[in-house]
Length: 73
Image (tube, rainbow, N blue to C red; front, side, top):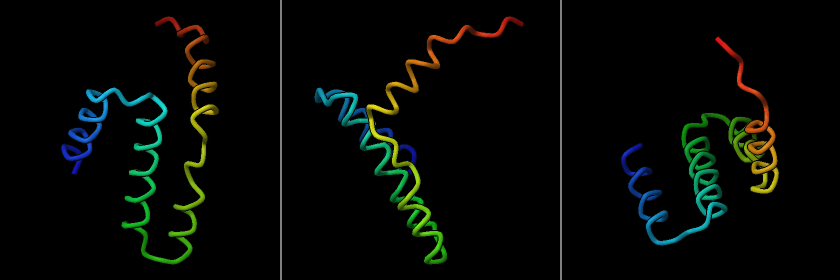
């Protein structure tokens, strides 16, 4: 299944899809897999409510993490 997702993502990347499209595709895939694996109605509801971070929120969080200094070893 991971190779299938990887193939889809690579195809999308090669066809010029935006970062937003790739992010949304990944989010939709995760949500679909969560719902497929859910065994109770409560788990299905939790899947639907999880991972609702917009691309803009994701991008801001990612940029904030990138600005943080890396810990020295």
